[in-house]
Length: 213
Image (cartoon, rainbow, N blue to C red):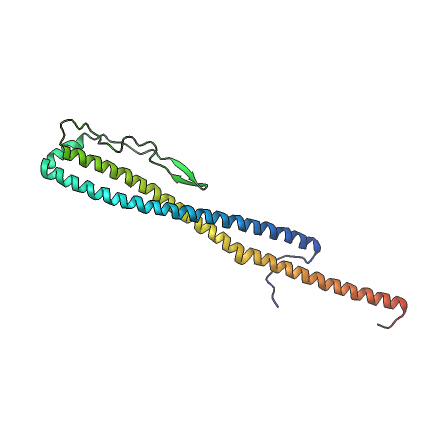
């Protein structure tokens, strides 16, 4: 019968003790991985709920921003809107930063973005419809960046959850069962050796006494 044991295993007591320690370490490692997996799952679902709320807020603000834009377009016209747009300074490239979430490096782009809640031009003399539309679109920009951060964080958590779940499954289905099976094999072999040694000792004593086998 083929026994699924660790290749190269020798049925010795030293190997038995070594494998017992290895089993303890593997089971502790498996428990730590499961705790880590549970923490990441909790973090993922909490962040996903927050993402859904922020996505709903983004959709509402975007709809309101377009409504304000249409009002400005009807009242002030495209020319006034374009002139107001020319006064908005180019923010340049956003600084790419990172932060740690459960040991994972994820992007953090919102820390150094100035005044996203206000228009990027002087509202003096500008139509209130244009000012309101600009303020709404500034909010849209902020929420879009926020959603980008949250989405990338969720992706990083999902990748880490998948990797950790695979490790836990490998421990549960391959490594620990193989160690247990190898321990059982060594114990059976040692018991068989003990029975053979006991039988040989009996035969040796019987021969010394001149008794028949």
